[in-house]
Length: 334
Length: 84
Image (cartoon, rainbow over all chains, first blue to last red; front, side):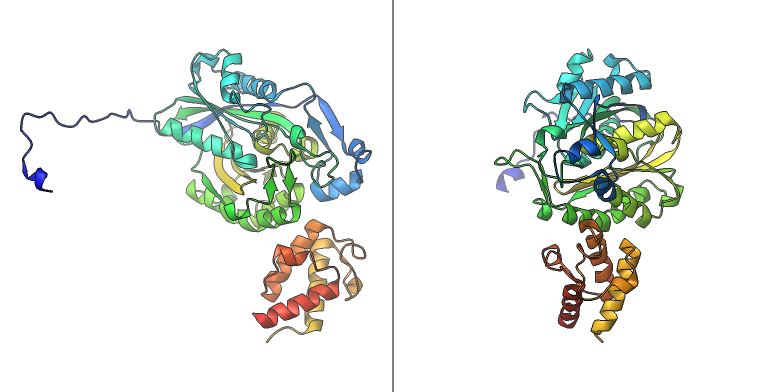
C-alpha cells in the first residue's frame, strides 16, 4: 500500500495492549445436589393409560418408576438442587460468580433459569445463562464452567441440569411417555491446582437432527427410538474413549461410568463396548426415568450420597441427545 | 464369495441367539421377528448391527422397517452382499 510508505511518526503511542489475567491450572467439582419431584409415577399407573405393562417397560427401558413435577416449576427444581450443591460445597451463595443452567424444557422463554436461581439464592451479581444441548446439556455446561475457570473468567461456577419433560410428553404415546421424567441436579465447580475435570470430547451429528424433536407445530417430544438406539450404541464408544484419552487415562483407570440415563439397554451396551462392566455403573434411570440434562448430575449425586462411589473416584460422564449432540469428560468425584 | 442363503440363515440364528436369546432351532425363514421370535425393536437394531458386521453389508434404518420375517432379512443380506 502506498500510504504505508509513510513511516509512522515516532511520537505516536503504541497500540493499546489488552490484558487478560491468568486463569487457574484446573477446575474441580466441590459440591453436588439433586432434586426429585414428590410425585411418583409407576409403570402400573402408565399401563392404565396406554397399552403397556410393567414387564414391557422394564424390558425395553429398565425403568421401574419415574418422578413427575406436578406443582414444582423448572426454577423450583433448579433452585432446590443448586442450594443442596452449594451446601455440599461449603461455599456461600455470594461466592458464586457464574451460573450455567442446561435445560430444554423451561416453561418460560424468558427469563433464563440461571438468573432466576441466582435471584432466589441471593447471589448478588453472578454471570448467568442457560444453554440447550438437550440431553447432553449438563456435560456441555460443565465444560463451559471448567473452561471459564481455566481462562480466568470465573473462580466458582454453579452448573445446573434441570428438566420438566412431562410438559412436552405426549401421554398417549407409549414409545415416549414410559421414558421421560422430571428432576434437577447441580454441581459447584471451583478453581484448583490440578485438573479435576478433564477436557471435553464433544460434537454433534446435525444430519440426524430429525430423530429427536419438539417442533413449533407439535407440542410434544418425538423420538425415533430405534434410530437413536442404533446411533448411541454404535457411535458413542469412541467418544467415551476419546474423553479418557484427553484426560490422560484409559477406561481401565475409571472407577465409575455415569452415562446419560437414556435407556438401560443403551447404557448396558455402552458399558460393554467400553469394557467397563466391572466398574460402578450409574443406574438412576430405574427410579428416575430419563430426565435429559438433569440425569447425569442426579445420578452422580445419588451414587456419591449412597456411598456407591467415593470422594476421589474417577468417573466418565457421557451424555447424548437431540441434535444429535454428545459430550463426555472424566471427573474426580468430590 | 457372497454368503449362501443357508449360511446367512445360520449366521442370523447365531446372532438372534446371542442378542435376544432366541433358540437357534426356532430361526426359520417364515418366522416373524416380532410376532414369532419376540424380538423387540431395540433387539432388532442389535441384530441388524451384528448382521452388518458379520456379513459386511449396510442395512439402513429405513430398510430395517421392511424386514418383517427372517426370510426377508436373508434375501436382503444376500442381495446387499452381491451388490457390494
